[in-house]
Structures are given as C-alpha cells and as structure tokens.
Image (cartoon, rainbow, N blue to C red; front, top):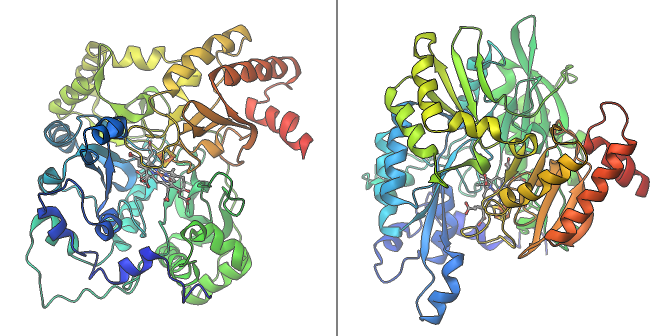
Length: 556
Ligand code: SRM
Ligand code: SF4
C-alpha cells in the first residue's frame, strides 16, 4: 500500500484536530482521571506538553489498584535560550507552585518542568503567558525551539543572529489559536481565518529542528539538526548562512532501517534569502516526508530517499533562486566557556556548570536559591546553552561584584571550578523517572558513573583531558550521545551500549564498540581503552580521534 493510503494514526489525529484543539477542553475537565484522552495525548505535544507518569511509582500504584500517577511535562518555546531576570523569578515560582520544583535546562536551550498535575496545567500556562512565555510548538510535528549559539562574547554579531533565531521561530509557528482557547479560555474568534499555508491541516510528518552555529564554536551541535545554519561572517559582517539539512540522532535498538545522521551541506544563501530557503526546506519535507511510518519520517530519511541533489533542486525550484557553494568556516570548539568573560561592549558573562541541566537545591548546594537571588538583583539576564548550562549575561561592570558575591555565597563558582573536565563536558538526558521511553537511567546515574571514571583518568594521567561524554537512557539520542567521544546508550536497567570514536567538534558520529555493559564492564573497558590511548596516541590526538583510528576504522 502506498504511504499516502496508509497514513499513520497520528496523521489522522492531526487532520481531525480542528487546529490542534481536539477534545482537549473535555479531557481537561474530566475529574475521573489524571490522564487526558488518547488522541489528545498526541495533540497536547503541539502545545509543548507530554503526558507522563511517575515510573518510580508504577508498581506501587498498580498494587494498590490505582491508575498510574499521571502528570505533565511542559517545555517552553525559547528561541536562542534567552530569559530576563523577571522571567526567571516567575519561572522559579511557577516551578515551586505547580511542578516538582526542579527546573530542567534541556539540550535545546530551553526549560522543562515536570510532574504538573492535569488540574495545574492551565494555571501553569496562564502564569507563563503573563510573563510573555509560551510553550507553543515546543514539541509536536512542527518546527520546534530554534537554537542559537549561546555566548554573546563570541561575536559582535551575536545579537543579529539571535534575533534571526527568534524570527525563524515566529515565522514557522502554527497559525491555530487553539493554544489560547484551550489553556487560557480565550474566546474563539469565529471571523478569524486560521488558514495555515505552511502546515495546512496535516502539519509536518515529524518533528523539525533548526539550530544556528556561529563559528568557531559549535556549541549548538549544528549538524544534528534537521536544518543547521552556520553563520558566515566576513570582514566583520554577517553575510549569510551555510545550510546543512538531514541531521538527526534517534534510532531504535534492533531496527537497522533507523540510523543517526549528520546534516548534508545544501549550500550557502545570503542572509536576505535565508528565511525563504528555510521555509522551503520545510515545505519539501512536508510534501515528501513519510507519513505512514513515523520511524522513517524525519527529514534525514526523506533526504536519503530523494538524494541530497534532488532535495536541494526541489528547494531551489520553490525558492526561485539557487544555493551558492558552501562558504569556508571552521569550528574549533563545542564546549561552554566556563567562568567570567567580557564581550565587545565591556559587559560581563559568567558561565556556570549545571550538571545535566538540573536546577535544584540538593546535597547542600543551594543552586536554585542562588539563581533566584541573582535574578532578584535584576543585574543579569539568563541564557541557556545547548550543553544544558547557564550563562548569567549582560552584567554591567559596576554590577559584577554584586553578582560575584552571590555566586560565591551560594557555592556556584566553587561547584563550577571544582567539576573535573570530563564532568564539565558531560551531558545526560532526563530518562527515568519521567521519560516513558527510557530503558535505563541517565541524568540520575551519569554523575555517579563519572565519579568512578575520574580515578581511571587520574591513573592514566588523563584527568585534564576535555573528553566529551554523554549518556542517554535509550537510543533516541536526546542527550546527543551519538556524537560524543564516549557515548552511553541505555539498553535495559543498569546496562549501556558503549559508543566511541565521535570527534570533539561534533563533525563525526561515534560507533557502537560494546553491547550492553554493566558498570563493571564499562569501567574495565574504559580502563583498557585509556591505557592504550595514553601509550599510542599521537601528539595532540583527542580520545575520539584516536578511538576512531584505532578501534573503529581499522575494524571496518
Ligand atoms: Fe528528546 C523524545 C527529552 C532533545 C531525540 N525527548 C523525547 C521525550 C519527549 C520522550 C517521549 O517522546 O515520550 C523526552 C521527554 C523526557 C522527559 O521526561 O522530560 C525527551 N529530548 C528530551 C530533552 C529534555 C533531553 C534533555 O535532558 O535535555 C531534550 C529537550 C530538547 C528541547 O528542549 O526541545 C531532548 N531529543 C533531543 C535531542 C537532542 C537535540 O535535539 O539537540 C534529540 C536527538 C536529535 C534528534 O532529534 O534526532 C532527541 N527525543 C528524541 C527522539 C528521537 C526522534 C527520532 O527521530 O527518532 C524522541 C522519540 C520520538 O520522537 O519518537 C524523543
Ligand atoms: Fe527519554 Fe530516550 Fe530521550 Fe533519554 S534519550 S529522554 S530516555 S527518549
């Protein structure tokens, strides 16, 4: 049967949803359950939410014949990852009033709150709305949060590029006002047309992600995006962007037709044509993407099905102009610049390490309180990084001492400085207890595992190496484990596939080296690998490059 005649269930739900409204209003008022109706569970994602349940409590609840402890995760749309101090204060209180209280900085530069009960979803969204924050299109088959290089020190052109990230986000929002009707009881404006030339009534075949990198830093991991933009700056002026399409990291264990892929270069467009080119890259995916099998629906599969040249040609036909050959650029780093730095305007920035993006007061470390106190001074903006960290930004020279004092008082500088290079370069996805797809722990386990890897690094005199290590609780790749130098991918509770050979800059994916190792297996294997690395590496060769040369390429 053709893809057209064999639409997936989600496709039917989208078309029948009347602008993503479905029966969400009815679902929300049903007091008999903490859940929402099945079709609405698919639609609520377009409003930036996932229905989840507390997996730690499943068994206990089932024994007591109770339904699972349903709650919602809400993800903000925050292009470029920027928040004012006032918004952070509001977020702090919303998190405390309605969610578990933990503020989670995600790998795509935004914020998630977890554990929000159904009855608290509307107050949460309304509270965000009063703070000029929303969660529209943060999830679902649409263009999602647009990421942008996070450190304004990198370039005087950062502001211009950040504004473009916001423009891309706004330009590709769904036209439906369903969000306001469902969550804020806005009246239906009958005379308002909701015609949506981009999404029509079927939206995209799958999620769509855009990220913008400003060389020389690839902190956004530009090539893992469905569409990655690399800013081309010549003679101190932003000229345009190289566009790379077809990145994506999700795979399914045992399903060889799924694979991780880095974006293919489509070419360069001057900045005046960039928005049109982006729009048409999306419409081609809308029209050619697979709508029957969601595991084959990302743009990476569409591009491999059509071929890069044919995909590019279709975009060019729709644009009415052609891509130029990609312009030269070079990445030299992918990490966050921890500590203090000053930008071209003399403003100060403090980049702090937040382990796996979890902002919470725990283990005698009052991080969340400290950030609230800093926000209350009104002296620093908040910028989130794609490495799940935070930059306190735009601090005037005269205000630096006040912020620094609060950073010291709340042990934030100590915590950032004391983290080992491996820990600072680590990331893990959420996984248990909220992620429905998790097969193993990730953010709750990686910190402990790193504490056990650190002595091995010391033993081999590798403690100062900036090795990038990432863990995900399943092969979906949310913590971007497929393009780390060392990637751990959960297979079952306590077991991980070990991947090695990714490069330091995010330009080469890693490869599976060992299956389903337990902790002892991981530590023994790394001990051996580090031993060989230290003895045989060339001068300056990174662990990822050495692993690729020694254990991956040679075995092909
Ligand atoms: Fe992700 C699904 C969390 C970044 C690939 N991701 C999920 C869900 C919503 C689970 C679900 O579908 O039920 C997770 C919610 C867990 C929870 O309890 O909060 C989830 N993904 C995350 C976050 C929060 C991880 C983190 O700890 O930071 C990241 C939120 C980003 C954001 O703010 O928008 C997150 N997810 C990513 C990334 C990395 C990136 O984009 O930089 C990827 C790999 C890149 C890519 O998209 O290919 C990623 N998430 C996936 C996939 C695999 C999609 C695929 O093509 O196969 C899924 C599963 C799916 O869509 O079916 C998924
Ligand atoms: Fe969940 Fe898997 Fe994503 Fe981790 S990688 S958050 S376990 S879907």
